[in-house]
Image 1 (cartoon, rainbow, N blue to C red):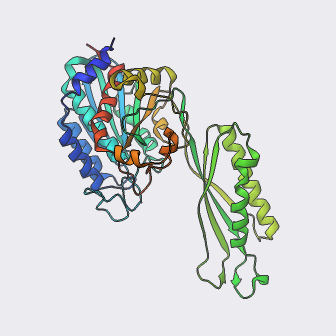
Image 2 (cartoon, helix red, strand yellow; image 1 turned 135 degrees about the vertical axis):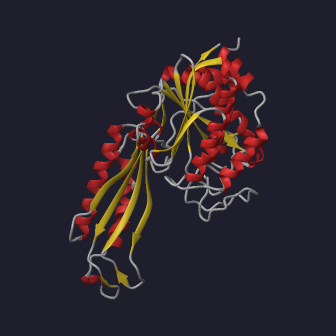
Image 3 (cartoon, rainbow, N blue to C red; image 1 turned 90 degrees about the horizontal axis):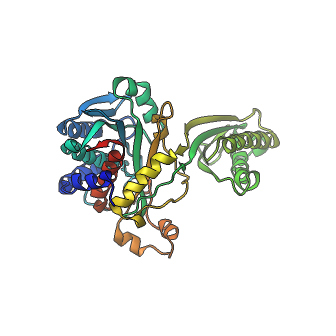
Length: 413
């Protein structure tokens, strides 16, 4: 027996204007904008929300968009899409590839905005089938971890109805047509760390008169690889990445400092704190061994929280997705090492469900080597790749996931 939410969702999305939505997506993809500069994208989304009948505000938290559709008594459901692009040079060869030099929607946020616009229009057009309030949020600056917090600090829940539930989704690699859900932990925390190694600069011909920070940084990078492999138990999942190392200006100059940028991925606060303590200890130790004139500077930068779905909320959404798309399309992939700032919208412990929509085109998936799902996932372009190109066939299903998810909580007639 199909639930009222699933039946209504199928009815409301049966006649989606797919060519129009695909055109909207292509336009967004051609014009990517970096975090907190999403002015054009925000304007395009706001225009779609207004046309659907939403009371719409722009400039929330900088470049955020909030649209409200009040439709009688019932719960308040927030649907969120992030809007920012990345400093990645596109290599997809698409006819609608980015026209902005060095910028690309390499994470699928253009698809997220398209899904939100389509879902908002479908739910507004079928408002006689449900009651409650929809809050459609176009969030800026997810990639930098600033957007959700900025919107909340700008009065998102004072200026607009406070939601009873939050719903969000993300494009992901995998054969188009799967909807992974995890009741509980689904995404990891992310922490940026910067290290400055202070040496004593000088001429390359007289290294004995210097303290070379490049050599010290090289030892430090190597030693940092032991934090996960030798200081954490095998059952504790974590990743430490050295994303950048910078030093020097010319071949024959030994510089006075070197800079190292790290990123940590953790799934518990205890592991995160142990890793930070190890990084500080190793940095001090290597600099002491090298005779550096000053202790290293270790600075903790931007941090994304863990994303932990409310179990009951996510199971309800997963159940309706299984009804809409088929039981075999919904599964629990376990927690990913990727990170999100979506949980920062859950002020005061608002329950939420966050899931994935796989978007790899069939021809790309079929050409990938491997027999198992996760083997093939490693072979196809993933988020943040210059070749990441979601299948346009996922435009309508991604709208349907949001519509069915919202109807799971709205009062359906």
